[in-house]
Image (cartoon, rainbow, N blue to C red; front, top):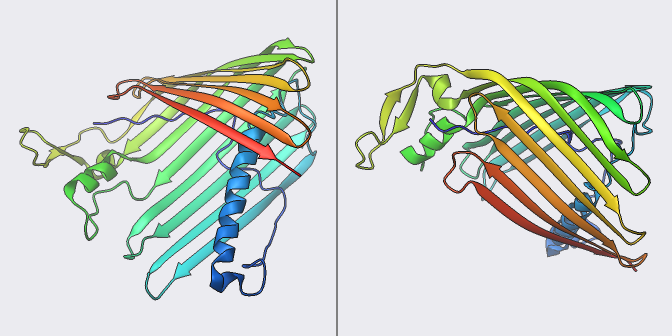
Length: 320
């Protein structure tokens, strides 16, 4: 049976929802009918994606306990879109976060619900996720962390929609119907100067997974090698075991114009493939108007056919 992996880092599953924002559906009268609004939305998406790329390197916990809002606060956001006429589809999302910061202790709980149907009215997304992120700062160098995640995928089953073949069903059976991880451990800033910051953290945790095949009690496999898929009974109902996570965050500023970052994560567990990711980034501030970020990301996953994936990213922002 195929195994997937969960890579849990200090980054949360969802972006923080700080304050509600509302916008009109068009930027000017007539923009909707002429297609201007749709293109404008895509422009905003690209701008946001580039800004997010830069923000990944702006680690507010780089040099120590970040100065964050004190007390209890949070927000909830909901979106729904339903289409009738030429297409019959709908999409629903609900996201929320509750945070509590009290001196050296910082924690947050996030929730995400996503539901969608395609143009044929068949479900193409049915997921619920909950995350927890906590940290206690003993001083500027030493801290402890807690990371938790639990996800439910309602499409990890043996249901066959119109147009689906057995390969589509097998893909659903290979997905995780349940996927959870909880880990705790210490972190330490080895270097903590104005120009260089390097912190490492390591933790031990517990992982629970249940695939769609384990959920329904069977899988689809080509047992005879003739290309025909047949039902094969699955005896175990879930997998669980101890997991380990090790992370490194390195930042160095050469001058006011150039700084580099290197983020590394390693996750290992008893019943799932090991995963190693590394992202190296170089940031250039050419001027007050021009900034560039070049990144190279490597992801290694044990036991897959091509174990290493590499991604080159380039982001440029110019303002005038």
